[in-house]
Every structure is written in structure tokens, then in C-alpha cells.
Length: 89
Ligand SMILES: [Zn+2]
Image (cartoon, rainbow, N blue to C red; front, side, top):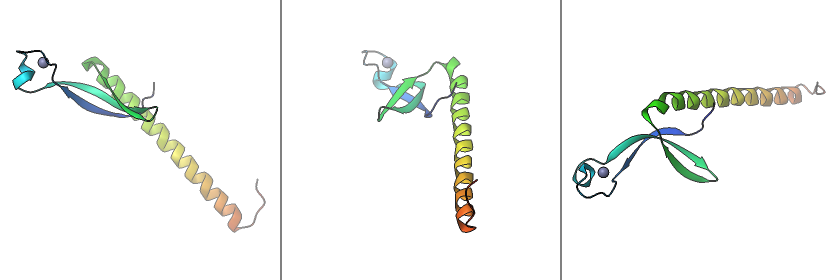
């Protein structure tokens, strides 16, 4: 599984009168913040999901870094072939 986005902490007041969040600290839960259809969205996570989501985010970053490195190598090769005026392989 791959996930793109970042881990964040979602804080909210539930609005129930008498709840501790009305006067004290808001409720907090781990959440995934991501962009979908050009809009930033937040998906709250259970404690059990955090490790899996963290790993999926890391895999995405790793895959993107590898793609960026390959794209950089491709650009370098294109420039090199032009500089030496070789015909493309
Ligand atoms: Zn509350």
C-alpha cells in the first residue's frame, strides 16, 4: 500500500454540553492529511492504523525519490548526448 500526504493531529470540539472538550482540551486523534481533487482533506485514523499509514507514506516518499533520481539521470543523459553530438541510442 502507498499513501501520499502527511500525518497530523486532528483536534475538534464535539459540541456536547458537559463534555470535557467544552472547557478543556479538544479531542485529539491521529489523522492523515492529503490532497484529493485539488482539495485538502483529513481522514482520522485509529491508533492501530497509524503504523500502517506511516509505513505507506514512507513507501510513497521512497518511490518518488527513486523516480526523481531516474528522471535526473535521464536529463543528464539527454544533455550528455547533446554535448557530445552523438546520435541517440
Ligand atoms: Zn467533546
